[in-house]
Amino acid sequence: MTSSASALASVLAVESDPGGGFVSPTIAEFYPPALAEFSIFGIDFTITRITVISWIATAAILAFLVLASRRMTVVPRKSQFLLEGSYSLVRDNIGRDVIGPKYKQFVPFLGALFFFIIANNAMSIVPFFQISPMSKFAYPLVLAILVYILYNAVSIKNKGLGGYLKEVAVPSGVPIPFLVLVTPIELLQVFVIRPFTLAVRLFANMFAGHMLLVVFSLGTVYLLGKIGENFSFVFAPFSFLMALFMTFFEVLVIVLQAYVFTVLTATYLNGAVEKAH
Amino acid sequence: MDLIAAESVNPLLPPVGEIIVGLITFAILAFVVVKFVFPMIEKTFQERRNAIEGGIERAEAAQAEAKAALEQYRAQLAEARTEAAQIRDAARAEGQQILEELRTQAQEESARIVARGEEQLAASRQQVVNELRGQIGSMAVTLAGRVVGESLEDEARRRGTVDRFLDELDAMSTSTPSTGTAGGSTVYVPEGDR
Image (tube, rainbow over the protein chains, first blue to last red):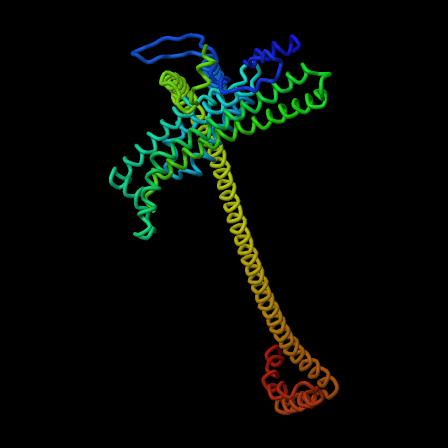
């Protein structure tokens, strides 16, 4: 390996094989060394590079939101326009169109979700960070648990516990014999699978995206180090192009997953506020 | 080191500490945006809506006002036109009346003038006839006295002669059958003069 390549490799947190062969990135990517470790009430806290990245992402999006919402005018400036556009996307296209007439009360939560996810997702392609906190299952899980609590609470509030359980377990229009099949599936779906898939979808997308980027980036570095041997000069540019292509693809995933997570939350809330049908 | 331990870690089982850190991070963001950022955006949306609605309202008011003014002008114009037509009709009628009156007056006047002229004419003719009758009588008597002399001294004869003469005169005159009958009385005028 060249010195610059090895420097880049260390940034990307990869171990080089003592034998000189290519070492593919492992799940260790997502468990960087701890920067600080402490314990409160018997719970161990480990502050790693990824934790810090999530703070930076959150602070950055907060800074943008607060600055852009300062001194807002009727005729928007550039930053205000961007802010209003993304807020309107959540408010009108997700909140109003999906939830329906009772959408207003949920817009703040949906907005916080959307901005938090998109900012943390975006860290997967920001230079020198290059990993999204959302590829740590804890972060999507937190959000999914909050959504889970919210849509169940709203459902119980609107329909009563009995009414809610009945609506889920005995969907209208299903012939009685089929309930043997449908009822367990529906209960499992609403109370277990739904929050789990919500969290896993976001986590897995960011996890896989990061792995792909790392594989092609490290592959490029490794092949450049081996230039002159085999056919590295053919494959190194190819690996680089793939890394580039996957970066653009990652941009799509960043936005799309934030959008999908928010839309699904809105869909569950719609089910919670609507009368059984 | 962590890396060795990480190989055996299940990524779907995150440590509780990490979940709590994630929760706190999200809670801070949610608090700030819900408390400060989103209300500002909603306020701006409301202001913009008000501005637009206010503009539309003002425009509608102005339009209504202009329409009302136009209606008023049209009404006034129609009124003025009606009034002018009325005045014209009245003037025409009045002129007609005046003309009629004048014509009647003139006809009356002319009739009166004609009547008076005829009266005067008749009167002066009568006068002339009377005068002529007297003069002609005395002239004829004088002339006849001179011509005949003493034969006319006899009263009775003289009267008969004169009367015959006058009758002849009357017969000669084309226009005097009526004066002929009155001839007897006219004889006394020259008789009284004598």
